[in-house]
Length: 496
Image (cartoon, rainbow, N blue to C red; front, side):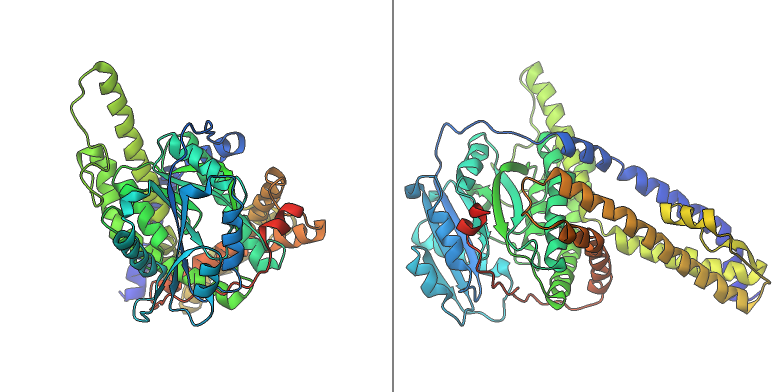
């Protein structure tokens, strides 16, 4: 018996395993449908703060002379007391006037030159060390993180302070886009951030779980950096999110605090950024995935504390029945938050493509070598596109056993995968329509023709992300800055 025949003889068994795994994965992620429903109707609201807290605003910038002044101007225009805000900028390996402009706009600016350690995380590590030396990190109650291209609505810090004053320790905010309608690439990013709000942030905030930090536009308590900043990977935001959840923190979302940032308009830059995100995603999974997995089963019996023994409430003996019930609820919350974050970090795309190639392509091809291609409909599949094509066309392939059937089986599997992806592409366009409708008050006004174009191109965001993940598995990825050149100011946005 040849190796091809041997593999083909085991195809049916492995196909059953393949679909069993698919069913299990679908069940594991089914809860996200609830997120979508909750996110459609609700988001968490915070009462006006009773106290005004003292904050440090932290900005890492590399050759950002074209945009950093506009960010600093938007900070000056906040309706929050300026005496409670101190702006820190690290001009990281800059060769332009970033540091000069930052100082002219009233920021405390430190310059860093270290080309061997180039990620944003290293720049933040340096900056928090300088803050400790000159001011003391604990002299500020919390810290905001922004990118140099951001712009803040005038009530941004006030709204974030409402959430902070309620007792929340890590808070993210509404990420809008200042160049939404510049081209289709920028629009895919813009819709992605809005999707994150509607499909993740809103529901997680309502359920008191932990949503994910997304690089910029977030606030955290000083205890996070009590011993310095130590997230220096390609995607420090993913690492911080995973570590915070593993330690028992909630990460909430303030829907009323809105800021704007600039999205890439070059496909080359977008591909480079998405590959870096994918590599950082894999690194965060390897580093924090095991701790999250342990927390799912052990809850607060096992909490990894990196930020100090008092930074999270470990499981303790209850003194009253009320405390006992509250501890049970908190333990369930922590376990599910760990599970949710683990599901978000797990690179399912890589696992799924591997099992598809092995079982559905290679093993099915070997099976066809043994028994032939048996009346296969070339428009098979469960997508609406496949069902519509089958309604109008009936084209089936039959082939006798042998080497030709082997290759025909493999090609049919690949074709049916392409057909499935085309069907999902069309169905995903409906998400863009949904987002344009439910977020129309927050989305920049544009022509219906642009909305139609951006609806057509929106699904490419996930396609690029999928293949970036495949590439990142094998590529050596280095951090490179994203160019920002938009001259849009917060006054321009407010005028529209």
